[in-house]
Structures are given as structure tokens and as C-alpha cells.
Amino acid sequence: MTRFLLFILLSTTSSMMASAQRFWRGADISWSTEMAADGKLFYNASGEATEINTLMHDCGMNAIRLRVWAEPTLGGWCGTQDVVDKALAAKTAGMEVLIDFHYSDFFADPGRQAIPAAWKTTDIAALADHVAAHTTEVLQALKNAGVTPRWVQIGNETRNGMLYSIYDETSHTWSTASGLATGSTDTKYGGGWDNYVKLSNAGYEAAKAIFPDVICMTHLDTRGSDTDLSWWFEAFKNKGGKVDMIGLSHYPMSWNAAGETSATTTGKQRNTALLDLATKLHEAYSLPLMVVETGVYCEYTTGGKAVMEDLFDQCRKSEAVKGIFYWEPEQYNWWKPAIYSTIGWTNYNMCAFLHNGSPSPILDAFQPTPEEIEADGIAKLTTNPADDNRSPQYTLSGRRAKAGQHGIVIDRNGKTLQ
Image (tube, rainbow, N blue to C red; front, side, top):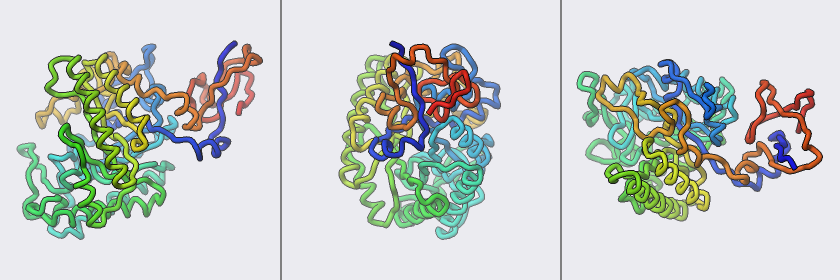
């Protein structure tokens, strides 16, 4: 008896989708266009060069996360047009899109939230206007291109606020934005929570104006010492902060672990701690959560795979967590952006590709379960002895159809299968 795939149109699965719970499996691949410009190709397990979004889809993913910078003067990537191009490619591969606004010209994180060079002002209302205008510009460009993001992240790792530091182009260092309007939650550097919430809400409201149904997310880093973050969300909500979903960063493998076995054990323990934290937040605020950044050491292939599989196992059992995104799996062979050499940064060491440019076993964790395949509304696996001699099925672009393929497929004789 031969097993075969019966592909069905999304429009025929609306009743099933209403009751099924989708689990989001994705990656941030924002470096992909820069890597391609450097001549880097991405390969499947057979050594065939493959478009990166298609490759991520084949690894089991159903969503892509893309960061956006205001005026990306450090390197020139992740600006509006670059993000639109990548989002279109993700959509073409059948992926949902998460747009990650850094509200900076370069990376924003708990230690760096640099005000874009063109936004410097002493007026918090003017700074909020910049946030709204930038959000509107990017999302309108996506809308004009036919891309509707499912999620929008209002700031990146904003535990300490947003837009509160400045970048020195001579020394390549970040420092406190003294004398300027900032969104730091610390009143020593500005208006505290009032200012942060004003800026965050400006992004939220601008996003909803373009895409009323988009899910707006607040994103915090997590740390090994975190057992609860309710203090943060209490302050945020008390000031009128608007949010639809909580995004968390989670890098479980210890930087100080003595070898792969120790790092693996530590990683699984941190996964459990993360789930405890997520459960508390979900119960306290009735908000869904996603792990929007995660990663493990690329050289710890066996241990990293085990930690990722453990993370998926735990999150899938949780009512709180709705998905997991790997941060920049596609980097390989010690590639790094050219600007990293200028500012003295080393290459990223938590990718999930092998040195030959193909996905490592770490990404095996992203393969969907049969229930997730059905919930995605893409394909249903059945068994029928009458179809043992069925001819191969192909997509409209001429590729042989595979498990999880989106859209219409036809058989070799041109018959449309639904």
C-alpha cells in the first residue's frame, strides 16, 4: 500500500482552521540578502542550491521574521526596500511574516537602543512622531507590495526601554543619549515609563492603522535569573501600554558550560525555566507568547539538536507558547557582515547550518507534527490502495510536490488535484 499526499486548497479548510491550533515554526533570516550579495549560496541536504525561504520551508518552517532599521548606514541592509524584497520572497514560499522594528539604524538590544541619527530631538512628542512615521512607511510599503504581516514587533528587546542611547561613528561605541528625549524606563535618562509607553504605543497605533488585524508584540530578552517578569508588564500596563502578544528571546545553552554534555544539560534546564516564566505571564495577563529568538551553539550539533527538540517538546505542551523562531540559522562557514570587522565584532556562533551551507541537524526540531501539518491547512496525509499507481504530483511552477507544499498541485497528465 502506497502512502501519498493529497493537497487541498486553503479555502476548503476554513472549518478545520477554526478549530485547529497552529504552532509557528520560523526563523529570522535577515542576513540572507547580504549573504547572497557576498556570493553565499544555500544548499539542501543533496547539495542543490536552494532559495533560502524555500529551504526554510523544506526544513518545516511556516514563518519568517525580518528586522527593519530606520536608516541602515552601518552596512546598508535591513532598510525598507530590503525588507520588502525579503518579505515578498517569504510570501512566495508560503510563509507568514513577522516584522521586527528595531527603531534604530543598527541592532537594538538591552544594552543598545540607539536613536536613529535623523531622529535626535529633545521633544518626546516629536520622537513619537518619528516612530509612527517610520512604522507607517515600512508597513505601507509592504501593503503596496501585497504582503500582509501576521505580526509586528514594536521594538527589539526593550526590557530597559527604547531609543535611549547614541552611537559614536568614530569610536564605534554606544552611550547614553544625554540631553535628548528618550524612551528609557529609567527616570535618570528621561521620562521613565511614561516616555517608553508613549513611544511604544505610537508604533502600535501606526501598525494598526495600516493593518487593523495585525498582532502587535512587545519583545523582551530573558535571562537565566528570570523567574518572573510581571514587574515589567505591571509597569507597562499601568501606564497604558498596548500589546497583543509577548515575544521572548531565549538562548538556552550556557556560555560557560564545560563541553557539549554540560551545555546540553544546562540548555534543557533553561528550557524548563522559560516555560515556567511563560506560564506565569500567560496566566497573569491572558496574552499569548512566542519565542521570537532562540539559538544554540552551532558546533554542538548533537547537543544543540537535543536542546532544540526539548524546547519544542515543552512549548508544544504549553497553552501559553504559540511558536518558536530561530535567530539567523543560515549563517555558515564563519561568515559575518563586513561592518563587524569595522566595529570589532566577531562572527555569530549560534547559527544552524553546516560549513557546507546546508541545514544542520539542529533544524530537525522544526519539522511539523502530523497535527501541525493539518492545522497549517496545507496537506493531509492519507492512505488509499486505489492510488498505488498514481502519477507524481507537481506544483504550478513545475517542481515536484513535497509534504507540506502550499497551493494547487497537478499530476503529470495536467489534472488539477484538490
